[in-house]
Length: 222
Image (cartoon, rainbow, N blue to C red; front, side):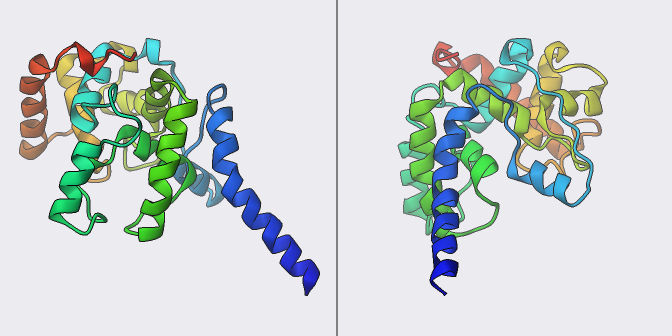
């Protein structure tokens, strides 16, 4: 019995320490998300072509930042302004997407799991602070744009998403195409940039109208 407990303790220690080691390792190697790993393990298709941030259209970079995390360049991994608003309005677990920073979404996608859970939220916040401390902002955004789910059939990353929706690479997106892809992110299984309905077109138009009002600080850390 002592041997079993010894192995369980070692396994738990590995699970706890793995995100800290991977946070450093993913500075230099392409990162897979837990959802990608799950699809590979269950023999489901995964389409992902890693592209560096410098090869991604600035239209897409600005659209995603404005839509997902406009204070990305100024927060420390957690947007305390948005988080406080969620705490004031709810129990903190049913947070709107705006309260979850890009750094927090990376942590969830690389190390944790989906779902409404106190445990997951409790792990997500300190890991986001850690990741922000050991990984430059430009690398965080590069990883996010390459692991985000961008289609209903295993399309991950903006290159796969752009080619699926518009038949062109991530570096050649127009402002409208970039906006449509950005507003897909909250629900890529129901929102389709290739065939946008009235609602998705409205969201993309609102985002395009807001973008000129975003200052240089939107991308100042890149």
